[in-house]
Length: 94
Image 1 (cartoon, rainbow, N blue to C red):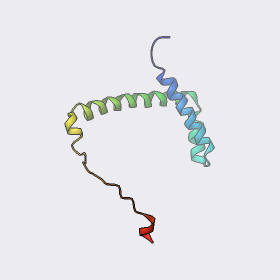
Image 2: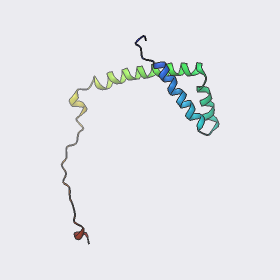
Image 3: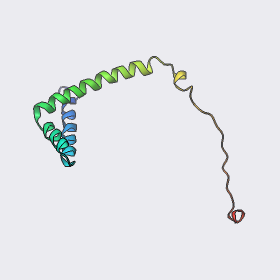
Image 4: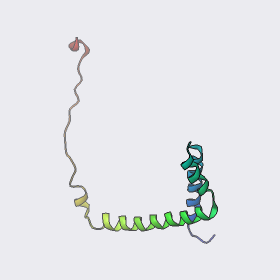
């Protein structure tokens, strides 16, 4: 209704899916992490932390990788080659 993206709700949903997968995986450590992710307080804080980290890293990625390089600099490593298909006959192989 406010026009904002539900980032925290999406993050919490993903963390619930991860918690379910961890609980299905055998092991004490995975169960402990899975149960910890089921607690609402920890899950919401972790979702906010991950969302903030993704925003920061996305900003750094877009500015550092693409704005500093021109289009021709990014495609200098292209390899140009030609090929020819060879079809051998079965009677020549015998």
